[in-house]
Image 1 (tube, rainbow, N blue to C red):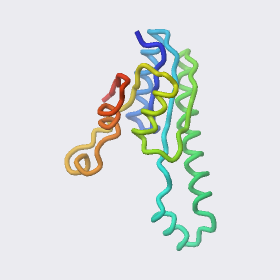
Image 2 (spheres, one colour):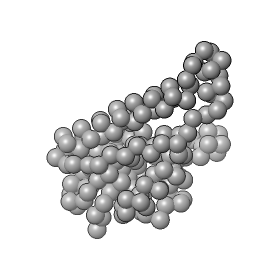
Image 3 (cartoon, rainbow, N blue to C red):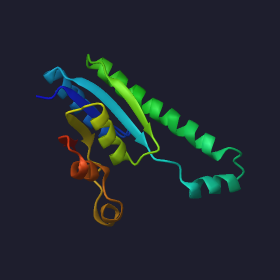
Length: 148
């Protein structure tokens, strides 16, 4: 059925539930697993504000900050996989919108299923910002399992 599963995570509690579901499915199917976390490109407006507050290297500081967060997220996911008796590869995609990074990773790594959490945005926030899960569902050529 599925041979290579991509689990997308942002490290949130809801994403951890999706990780657990993805790892359980992979174990049952004896599929390989890749875990991805995606970080947005830096915002020029935010970096300018940081520079005004006295930050000497706002781009470098941002890069180090997101790398540390991604490492923490991927390390936790890898630890959960190990606890469940699985191995997984981990990938940090930088400077991408999350949905685009997830879809590109699934394609380049030849995954045949994407597992991710639904972040449950509602009302005006969903209408204005959309949902990464909705974007992945809309644009992915790979089946997507959305965990609530």
